[in-house]
Length: 513
Image (tube, rainbow, N blue to C red; front, side):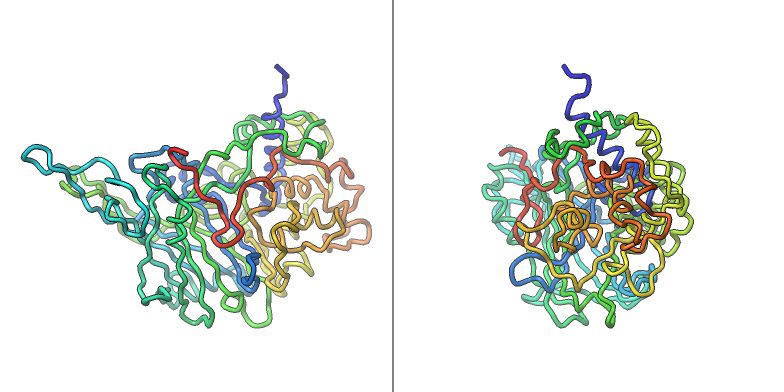
């Protein structure tokens, strides 16, 4: 037994990376799982990842794909009720198209579960079955499904609560209700889950948008790669491994056998931008009603045992990955989940004077390795305002959003640099379509953020300030120097299986394979 197993190596580096990310309060590199005290009590409202990128499917490169994943860490065998969404919650994807840190376009998802109460004749009695299925399932609204899950999608222009609301409709028939596929129960129940799920991809019409869009909601294989156990064990990894590019895939992915629930939209960019400004910011939130009353005597034949009422209260928020999980201090995690980007000034110290680089320096036994250019304006620029000339709006308010320049063309999957803009700098390439300019499923946000947090972009910036980070961001402010570019977490995001087109995320793991 080695005292530093590779699994711990990858995790520890990842933890350090997360810590570094945290310091920029918008610099993120991973999924958010159970990231704040309250959200652990309502996992159906817990956002794990948010993606926003120019679609790279052939013929769709003028479209923006927005993906919000919820209900993390789903075990494929999690029956008999699996992972239905919460009918009492409001799930939203927000777009800021003028840089003022306020939503201009919001897509709202609401869910409904319809119980059939399928019964069998047992002797002289008709008795409801205990499962969500009574036989094989292959079609939408299959007769063998005991529970049908459906959803609606509204678009709100302006403020999410007081703006103009319209229903998004099915391009075939004009209906406003869409079916969600049941989770991947297993091969005997759903012989071909890929084909079954594909029947739930809808072409839709968005009021005020001249181009048809697509929507899909359903279970997917978790696309994020991480070694979570090691990460949260104080980054227990040998420096020699996490600075060796040859060890990039040395550790297993802890999330390889987990699923998530995906809310995915593909919208023409002309329906999201405003005027001549090509940069949009995005984030996802989940809200619950202010009051919840439990029924002490639930009625027979009903699934629900509670009633919700009152104003909507935001309980989950995610733009850049892992910000709340490893950047925001413990006393403010629930506050961050309830906050709007326009109010992010209250969290400024977590970005400008981060604790995680110092923590990473300590747990990896690399004293003095944290960058010295305080306040960290390089991180503020990269993650809170966008990089000038890449994804910074003309009139930007610093805030935690995932920002995408819709005028930068998509790069085909095979040519995508897994390190996004950082990899593009290293390779002197032409892929500026990746994180932190939006986020694609292939982008290794952990490694990218690790490089940025430990000052790698300051090294690339050089004394000429080519990236506009400010005079304090010089190579001399980075104790690790060029080594910062070699940092990784030993888990390779680029090898995670994905689909070539919408909804991009792979078929979920089944209860039986």
